[in-house]
Length: 98
Image (cartoon, rainbow, N blue to C red; front, top):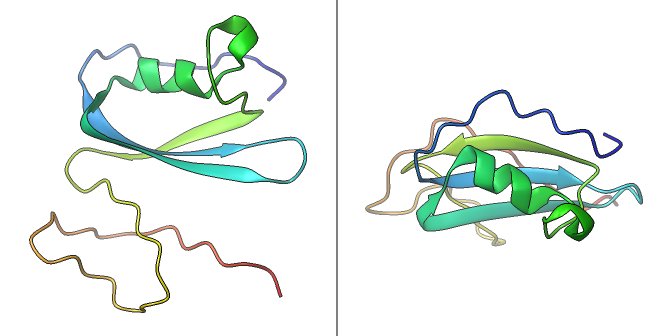
């Protein structure tokens, strides 16, 4: 928070990533980096403010997952399987407040 960089690794392995980012106005962003992916370090920079070379301007960001199980699924369908993809053993569920 407050623009402080807190990356504790600089692994250069490119992986798909799932990242959650928060903003000061109580909004958030779920980002999935697919394909060849990014290193964790590159993904961290992407979440930073444009004034320091980033893009999204997050107040805080957290890498949730990386690798073949990285998926983002948005639907009103309640089934949680995507045929042919790597099994996902955990999930973050986001629902609109009523």
